[in-house]
Image (cartoon, rainbow, N blue to C red):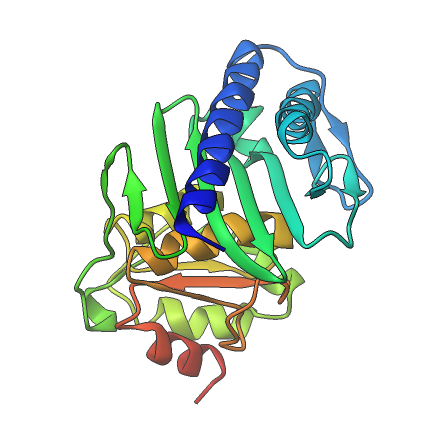
Length: 258
Protein backbone atom coordinates (compact mmCIF):
# COMPACT_ATOMS: atom_id res chain seq x y z
CA UNK A 1 0.00 0.00 0.00
CA UNK A 2 1.41 3.41 -0.95
CA UNK A 3 2.00 6.15 1.64
CA UNK A 4 -0.35 8.39 -0.33
CA UNK A 5 -3.24 5.98 0.00
CA UNK A 6 -2.42 5.40 3.64
CA UNK A 7 -2.51 9.14 4.24
CA UNK A 8 -5.98 9.31 2.71
CA UNK A 9 -7.17 6.48 4.92
CA UNK A 10 -5.60 8.10 7.97
CA UNK A 11 -7.37 11.38 7.20
CA UNK A 12 -10.66 9.51 7.18
CA UNK A 13 -9.84 7.75 10.45
CA UNK A 14 -8.99 11.06 12.12
CA UNK A 15 -12.09 12.87 10.92
CA UNK A 16 -14.35 9.93 11.83
CA UNK A 17 -12.85 9.61 15.32
CA UNK A 18 -13.28 13.31 15.98
CA UNK A 19 -16.88 13.27 14.75
CA UNK A 20 -17.64 10.28 16.95
CA UNK A 21 -15.94 12.04 19.83
CA UNK A 22 -18.32 14.98 19.44
CA UNK A 23 -21.19 12.51 19.76
CA UNK A 24 -19.81 11.17 23.03
CA UNK A 25 -19.43 14.65 24.49
CA UNK A 26 -23.16 15.25 24.11
CA UNK A 27 -23.68 12.51 26.69
CA UNK A 28 -20.57 12.96 28.84
CA UNK A 29 -21.20 13.72 32.53
CA UNK A 30 -24.94 13.30 31.99
CA UNK A 31 -27.24 10.94 33.86
CA UNK A 32 -27.24 8.11 31.30
CA UNK A 33 -29.07 4.82 31.37
CA UNK A 34 -26.54 2.00 31.48
CA UNK A 35 -27.13 -1.51 30.14
CA UNK A 36 -25.05 -4.61 30.84
CA UNK A 37 -24.00 -6.74 27.87
CA UNK A 38 -23.60 -10.51 27.81
CA UNK A 39 -19.92 -10.20 28.73
CA UNK A 40 -20.98 -8.10 31.76
CA UNK A 41 -19.43 -4.92 30.36
CA UNK A 42 -21.49 -1.71 30.40
CA UNK A 43 -22.91 0.02 27.32
CA UNK A 44 -24.83 3.25 26.76
CA UNK A 45 -26.57 5.11 23.96
CA UNK A 46 -23.33 7.10 23.57
CA UNK A 47 -21.38 3.94 22.67
CA UNK A 48 -23.92 2.98 20.02
CA UNK A 49 -24.32 6.43 18.48
CA UNK A 50 -20.55 6.89 18.40
CA UNK A 51 -20.09 3.61 16.51
CA UNK A 52 -22.91 4.47 14.10
CA UNK A 53 -21.09 7.72 13.29
CA UNK A 54 -17.82 5.87 12.67
CA UNK A 55 -19.49 3.30 10.43
CA UNK A 56 -21.38 5.90 8.42
CA UNK A 57 -18.21 7.91 7.76
CA UNK A 58 -16.32 4.83 6.59
CA UNK A 59 -19.11 3.34 4.50
CA UNK A 60 -19.74 6.63 2.70
CA UNK A 61 -16.13 6.66 1.46
CA UNK A 62 -15.32 2.95 1.20
CA UNK A 63 -18.51 0.87 0.96
CA UNK A 64 -16.56 -2.29 0.09
CA UNK A 65 -14.32 -2.17 3.17
CA UNK A 66 -14.95 -4.51 6.08
CA UNK A 67 -15.88 -3.18 9.51
CA UNK A 68 -15.62 -4.89 12.88
CA UNK A 69 -17.00 -2.91 15.80
CA UNK A 70 -17.57 -3.60 19.46
CA UNK A 71 -21.26 -2.71 19.47
CA UNK A 72 -22.56 -3.80 16.04
CA UNK A 73 -20.27 -6.66 15.06
CA UNK A 74 -18.86 -7.45 11.63
CA UNK A 75 -19.76 -6.35 8.11
CA UNK A 76 -17.93 -7.64 5.02
CA UNK A 77 -15.55 -9.47 7.34
CA UNK A 78 -13.66 -11.19 4.51
CA UNK A 79 -12.63 -7.88 2.86
CA UNK A 80 -8.91 -7.14 2.49
CA UNK A 81 -9.38 -3.77 4.22
CA UNK A 82 -10.96 -4.15 7.65
CA UNK A 83 -11.69 -1.24 9.96
CA UNK A 84 -11.76 -2.06 13.67
CA UNK A 85 -13.75 0.24 15.92
CA UNK A 86 -14.20 0.79 19.61
CA UNK A 87 -16.59 3.75 19.90
CA UNK A 88 -15.85 4.30 23.60
CA UNK A 89 -12.92 2.48 25.10
CA UNK A 90 -13.31 2.93 28.83
CA UNK A 91 -17.10 3.01 29.08
CA UNK A 92 -16.86 2.42 32.83
CA UNK A 93 -14.84 5.64 33.10
CA UNK A 94 -17.15 7.47 30.69
CA UNK A 95 -20.32 6.75 32.65
CA UNK A 96 -18.65 8.04 35.82
CA UNK A 97 -17.61 11.29 34.17
CA UNK A 98 -13.90 10.45 34.07
CA UNK A 99 -12.26 11.94 30.94
CA UNK A 100 -9.77 9.14 30.19
CA UNK A 101 -12.02 7.30 27.71
CA UNK A 102 -11.14 7.18 24.02
CA UNK A 103 -12.58 6.63 20.55
CA UNK A 104 -10.47 4.03 18.73
CA UNK A 105 -10.17 3.51 14.97
CA UNK A 106 -7.79 0.97 13.47
CA UNK A 107 -7.34 -0.41 9.96
CA UNK A 108 -5.75 -3.63 8.82
CA UNK A 109 -4.97 -4.64 5.25
CA UNK A 110 -4.51 -8.31 4.41
CA UNK A 111 -4.19 -9.05 8.12
CA UNK A 112 -1.54 -6.40 8.89
CA UNK A 113 -2.44 -3.32 10.99
CA UNK A 114 -1.80 -0.21 8.91
CA UNK A 115 -2.91 2.74 11.00
CA UNK A 116 -4.44 3.70 14.30
CA UNK A 117 -6.19 6.68 15.84
CA UNK A 118 -7.01 7.07 19.53
CA UNK A 119 -9.00 10.23 20.26
CA UNK A 120 -9.77 11.46 23.78
CA UNK A 121 -12.71 13.84 23.32
CA UNK A 122 -12.99 15.07 26.90
CA UNK A 123 -9.24 15.76 27.08
CA UNK A 124 -8.89 17.31 23.64
CA UNK A 125 -6.05 14.89 22.84
CA UNK A 126 -5.47 12.65 19.84
CA UNK A 127 -2.73 10.13 19.06
CA UNK A 128 -2.32 8.61 15.62
CA UNK A 129 0.06 6.75 13.35
CA UNK A 130 0.26 5.10 9.99
CA UNK A 131 2.75 2.44 9.00
CA UNK A 132 6.08 4.08 8.16
CA UNK A 133 4.88 7.58 9.05
CA UNK A 134 5.83 7.94 12.70
CA UNK A 135 3.49 8.41 15.64
CA UNK A 136 1.92 11.74 16.49
CA UNK A 137 0.29 13.21 19.57
CA UNK A 138 -1.64 16.46 19.19
CA UNK A 139 0.42 17.34 16.13
CA UNK A 140 3.86 16.67 17.55
CA UNK A 141 6.02 13.59 17.17
CA UNK A 142 5.36 10.93 19.80
CA UNK A 143 8.19 8.77 21.13
CA UNK A 144 8.52 6.23 23.90
CA UNK A 145 10.76 6.84 26.88
CA UNK A 146 14.38 5.78 27.22
CA UNK A 147 13.95 4.09 30.61
CA UNK A 148 15.99 0.88 30.53
CA UNK A 149 15.54 -0.55 34.03
CA UNK A 150 12.38 -2.12 35.42
CA UNK A 151 12.98 -0.52 38.80
CA UNK A 152 12.80 2.90 37.15
CA UNK A 153 9.69 2.13 35.10
CA UNK A 154 6.09 3.23 35.49
CA UNK A 155 3.54 0.47 34.95
CA UNK A 156 -0.11 1.21 34.19
CA UNK A 157 -3.15 -1.00 33.84
CA UNK A 158 -6.92 -0.72 33.94
CA UNK A 159 -8.43 -3.05 36.53
CA UNK A 160 -6.31 -5.23 38.78
CA UNK A 161 -9.20 -7.68 39.09
CA UNK A 162 -8.93 -8.51 35.40
CA UNK A 163 -5.68 -10.38 35.94
CA UNK A 164 -7.36 -13.00 38.10
CA UNK A 165 -10.14 -13.38 35.52
CA UNK A 166 -7.50 -14.07 32.85
CA UNK A 167 -5.48 -16.33 35.21
CA UNK A 168 -2.60 -13.87 35.04
CA UNK A 169 -2.68 -12.69 38.64
CA UNK A 170 0.62 -14.41 39.54
CA UNK A 171 2.28 -12.88 36.47
CA UNK A 172 0.98 -9.46 37.42
CA UNK A 173 2.31 -9.76 40.94
CA UNK A 174 5.76 -10.61 39.60
CA UNK A 175 5.70 -7.57 37.36
CA UNK A 176 4.34 -5.08 39.85
CA UNK A 177 6.93 -6.13 42.43
CA UNK A 178 9.74 -5.40 39.95
CA UNK A 179 8.77 -1.90 38.80
CA UNK A 180 9.21 1.51 40.37
CA UNK A 181 5.72 3.01 40.10
CA UNK A 182 2.28 1.53 39.49
CA UNK A 183 -0.88 3.39 38.49
CA UNK A 184 -4.27 2.47 37.05
CA UNK A 185 -4.57 5.09 34.31
CA UNK A 186 -5.86 2.36 32.07
CA UNK A 187 -7.84 1.43 29.00
CA UNK A 188 -6.46 2.95 25.79
CA UNK A 189 -5.13 5.92 27.75
CA UNK A 190 -2.54 3.66 29.38
CA UNK A 191 -1.21 2.46 26.03
CA UNK A 192 -0.96 6.04 24.82
CA UNK A 193 0.98 6.97 27.95
CA UNK A 194 3.57 4.44 26.81
CA UNK A 195 3.55 5.71 23.21
CA UNK A 196 4.10 9.29 24.38
CA UNK A 197 6.87 8.48 26.87
CA UNK A 198 4.85 9.13 30.03
CA UNK A 199 4.86 5.48 31.15
CA UNK A 200 6.94 2.45 30.18
CA UNK A 201 4.58 -0.55 30.52
CA UNK A 202 0.85 -0.98 29.96
CA UNK A 203 -0.71 -4.36 30.73
CA UNK A 204 -4.04 -5.54 29.35
CA UNK A 205 -4.92 -9.09 30.45
CA UNK A 206 -8.01 -9.12 28.22
CA UNK A 207 -8.05 -7.21 24.92
CA UNK A 208 -10.14 -7.44 21.77
CA UNK A 209 -8.88 -6.99 18.21
CA UNK A 210 -10.92 -3.80 17.78
CA UNK A 211 -8.83 -2.30 20.57
CA UNK A 212 -5.44 -3.73 19.60
CA UNK A 213 -5.67 -2.76 15.92
CA UNK A 214 -5.42 0.95 16.71
CA UNK A 215 -2.79 0.46 19.42
CA UNK A 216 -0.17 -1.57 17.57
CA UNK A 217 0.69 0.97 14.84
CA UNK A 218 0.85 3.87 17.28
CA UNK A 219 3.04 2.10 19.82
CA UNK A 220 5.36 0.68 17.14
CA UNK A 221 5.72 3.93 15.22
CA UNK A 222 6.56 5.65 18.52
CA UNK A 223 9.45 3.20 18.93
CA UNK A 224 7.78 0.79 21.31
CA UNK A 225 6.57 -2.82 21.22
CA UNK A 226 3.03 -4.17 21.27
CA UNK A 227 2.45 -7.91 21.71
CA UNK A 228 0.15 -10.31 23.48
CA UNK A 229 1.21 -11.79 26.81
CA UNK A 230 3.08 -14.58 25.01
CA UNK A 231 5.27 -12.00 23.27
CA UNK A 232 3.65 -12.50 19.86
CA UNK A 233 3.21 -9.43 17.66
CA UNK A 234 -0.51 -9.78 17.00
CA UNK A 235 -3.80 -7.98 17.49
CA UNK A 236 -5.65 -11.28 17.82
CA UNK A 237 -3.98 -12.65 20.95
CA UNK A 238 -6.84 -11.60 23.26
CA UNK A 239 -4.39 -9.70 25.48
CA UNK A 240 -1.92 -6.85 25.14
CA UNK A 241 1.35 -5.50 26.46
CA UNK A 242 2.74 -2.15 25.36
CA UNK A 243 6.26 -1.16 26.37
CA UNK A 244 8.97 1.29 25.39
CA UNK A 245 10.79 -1.64 23.65
CA UNK A 246 13.86 -1.47 25.90
CA UNK A 247 11.91 -3.32 28.60
CA UNK A 248 9.75 -5.57 26.46
CA UNK A 249 11.81 -8.75 26.60
CA UNK A 250 12.23 -8.45 30.37
CA UNK A 251 8.50 -7.84 30.84
CA UNK A 252 7.44 -10.84 28.75
CA UNK A 253 10.01 -13.09 30.47
CA UNK A 254 8.91 -11.99 33.91
CA UNK A 255 5.25 -12.45 33.02
CA UNK A 256 6.07 -16.01 31.96
CA UNK A 257 7.88 -16.68 35.22
CA UNK A 258 11.33 -16.91 33.64
